Image 1 (cartoon, helix red, strand yellow):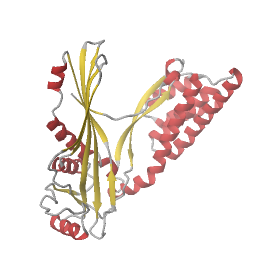
Image 2: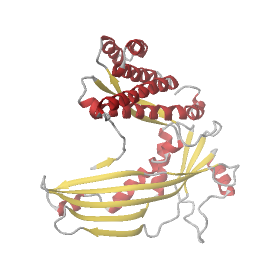
Image 3: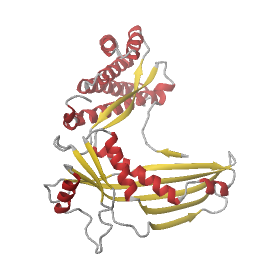
Image 4: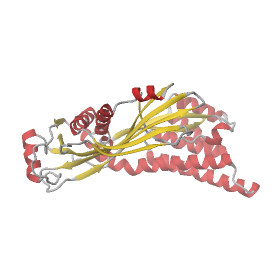
Length: 367
């Protein structure tokens, strides 16, 4: 079994579990900018393999065994170099799938495979110009290195009566961007991510036999490594989680109906009415929802203004509770954390809007 790990923090907390306020979770897909902005004149790119030949793939072996009686039976940590050809092909395919450039060309043969004497891995300007000319492209993205850290672990789960085996691999691909008119690389991108396999069986021997082999692990992890740098190179989509407060008054319930129909303008109007008429938590709920409504319409600056209002109301509520009871109530603290997290998300989106617009300018708003 294979799993890709992506970590995110979802805070529901006491406000969703112990409150009479109705709360719904929504998903929103939005685009974030890449770390680098490519000029619109760069339309054709070649992905090249600039990794050296690796005579012995395994670099370090560090095995550890636990004492008898402990649930963990064995742990083995290895370090590897990835397969440059596989990673280069995966990187080129991932870039082509995004349809960001007009053409993506691949040169997956190792450029340094015929080297007799060791040399610096960075391509010279002459090499870049020759490759750009031969491949008929505007610039190069070169795979320079792929390193991996593998942790293979087997443990016993006494409650279930099974042995549980995992292989967790962290990949570290490095790519460089080369322009023919520059002496050195325009940018170096170091990235990392994890890929994960697991098996559960009644005996340790069966788990060992079914866990992914070392050779297959390197192949699959090398392919996965090629996809990792893409979100650093190109604008990418992210799925975020938002919360909608839908109870407490007729206006809030009616607005939630509009929200489910994606009629955000009508929903916002009702939330603003509630904000102006109510106090305390209801006012905060309305401010938070209004921020959500504007975000759904891509009015990020206005959404941030309303999120800050919701955060201020949550902060004030926590101070009031502390004065009354001598301590901040857990639910109130959760509201403040929730609104603060939302403010952070919107600030990041607002900060990246200018770069995103520049990066997507080549599509002339057709995206």
